[in-house]
Image (cartoon, rainbow, N blue to C red):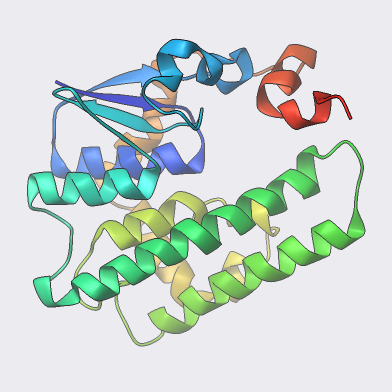
Length: 225
């Protein structure tokens, strides 16, 4: 059975959505970042980047959420979009991987977790995050889904982060992007999205952000100069 190593962050949730949409059987295995599970030798043998998600499928390991989505789409024959849309699919998947995810993550970090508020960093990452989401909103003005008329892994990749826009950019962000909001509302209404969200309740993740959790989550803060 496919093993799905996950936590409650936006990137694992993309994969959870695909697994629930496709009906592939899987075993959910928690990787508790605040406890430092991602830094164990056993997990680093699966994902050398010490992040979730990762999967192991009959001995084949795949890490990075968008790589996993592409792999699973090919494996199942579902949600990869029309064959002629493959270049578009890959382009948007990389856009999410190199733009939406990193800028959103840095925006969240500097707004909510950095030990000191740095106006320059906050302004830069908020600007770039909003710019990237604006590109999605503009694209969706003339497309029902990211690949036109067909729901695909690109929409799932977008959903993982865009559903958290209030945390990334504030409560007014998603309402200001009506086309992206339409897509989020539609995906959130899908039974698979409800089941994907419920995966968080399968395991008791550490909730305290104590000193040990900060060391495990933000090791750069404890690096000697």
